[in-house]
Image 1: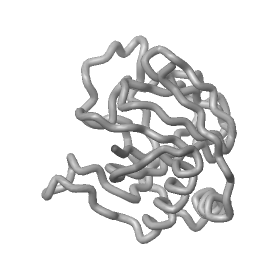
Image 2: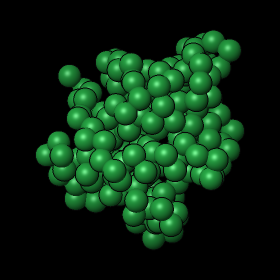
Image 3: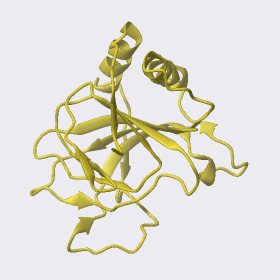
Image 4: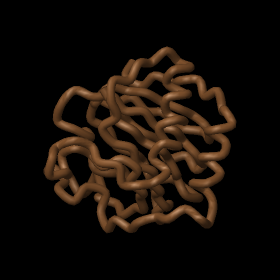
Length: 177
């Protein structure tokens, strides 16, 4: 089993953070493709879809110093929520590598995004689903059909999503070791 479903204690921190991300006060940034440096892929099977994002912690690969860089003043709130959930599930974290909120809009038809791994070294992924839009994730062939407030964990394996059928798929994703 590649995907582990975690329990979400839905703490007050989580509820407040989720409310903020889903509010009109949260800033989103447009990305015309999901992977600017996409690996070779079969365009009949996958699409490099556009999406909105908000980076809390920038991945080390893109920084001059090669260490993660905090880009958002709400970074600590994101860390608090993630650590509450991971601690509740007895998952230890040495360091976060990346924390991002992503928003994928539905396409005219469901499409698979480009398969990828988030880093090219050992890491873990945790995803919090903040809406009930669906948008299955497929990790090494294993699919998870998310519901609002789901939390999943998987090793740094190749994965992709199937775009939602309706509504915005909003998640908080973090990578860590």
